[in-house]
Image (tube, rainbow, N blue to C red):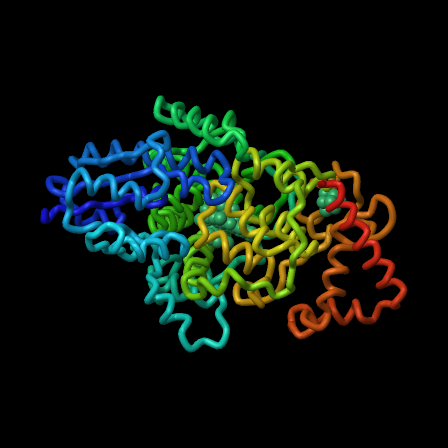
Length: 512
Ligand SMILES: Cc1cc2nc3c(=O)[nH]c(=O)nc-3n(C[C@H](O)[C@H](O)[C@H](O)COP(=O)(O)OP(=O)(O)OC[C@H]3O[C@@H](n4cnc5c(N)ncnc54)[C@H](O)[C@@H]3O)c2cc1C
Ligand code: SF4
């Protein structure tokens, strides 16, 4: 049997730091990349996501060839059903002594890989993904024995371990670990929002866009607006642009909801990080340097670094620590069917309509739209947890289950009984009004709770509190709200919850 190895590179592992490639020998080993029906179709992926992954895979193939690798590449048109089928086909043509692959980011695929040894008839080595800053062992050691897991403490450890934003004595820069309090300014048109770069489209990207449009006619995604970087080089230019033009305002307006811009001052890089075009630590170091050079405030730099070094690594740790049991959690027994307007954006709640429209068209919504508009609605309406998670996994260009699931099931829906978040992110229309400018153009009023023209988020919020009163009252962070609700006259409470029922019935019925 030949000693050469067959290296499989998955579509979200497009990095030369991929551990399966790090020790590969271009003179001996063969690399395989495959666009296959199962991966492209296990949810109704946004066409932007499929196009980005395929175009970046084809660009990466060229990069590998330039480095001397022989690459076997299957396009979707080759008709292979699964990754395993691609490996079978290559092994029939070129016998290899071993298959190597970096572990996938989804439990679903990792389980499938367990059967590959037998199916392929050669040993399959699945290597740990070293592109993250906390290994599985690191996270397990940090989590082990703790009564309660909280991102903030994990994040401080990560800052110390990677030497990010520290004074020489090891204390946090600016004498505080967290500047979150300064990152909550509502949007009142205070700043000019810079237009994003128009990214060049070469023949490769144009061909992929045409193929994806033809193969996935019913998936969401307006490919006429495709504007994602498909190479590591372009992704780095995007990040440089962010550091120069958006980072200075990133901190202040991180939680802002803005009519005029889908991106506001956000970085628009999650998709590049998640598929391997960018690496997390250099981004944190570049942002720290921007602060040290006086190009942005400490609050902006810390706010950004916390997302990458803290949240991103933390959600991954939670995912692998708790799967597969995590996926079945449903604290509030939420089972209402997902309304059709999640696929059409056809709703008259302005904030929701805006967030859904850009999600479906671009595959992007920023964090507060995902959490406090769409996720908040799903939580208050009691939408089925699994259906909501599947929807999030489908519609976003950056969605891979390791990061999507804890954010949706845990952070947005609180279906994990508070593992991810110390209290439910439930909010009324008043929060949405405070954070942005959608309410001005809405037919509803955030000042009204019941009656015609009342913002549905208001009654739905109190209906949620009422339905889960005992559970929420046991949470010290919800004590004041639940106590106030309990003090209200029973007739008032009834009027609000009845109105909430009515709003919900109408919203669900109007969406067919
Ligand atoms: C319900 C819900 C679902 C989400 N699903 C995904 C998903 O499928 N894929 C995904 O990458 N992110 C997801 N997020 C996290 C976050 O919303 C996106 O990472 C972010 O909006 C991407 O846009 P950006 O690159 O402009 O981010 P910025 O706001 O500029 O933040 C910078 C980077 O920090 C990281 N980051 C920020 N918040 C988080 C977080 N909570 N978890 C993990 N990383 C974070 C991302 O890599 C992001 O690119 C979800 C959040 C919620 C509330
Ligand atoms: S009034 Fe309510 S539904 Fe309308 S934009 Fe404001 S929060 Fe959203």
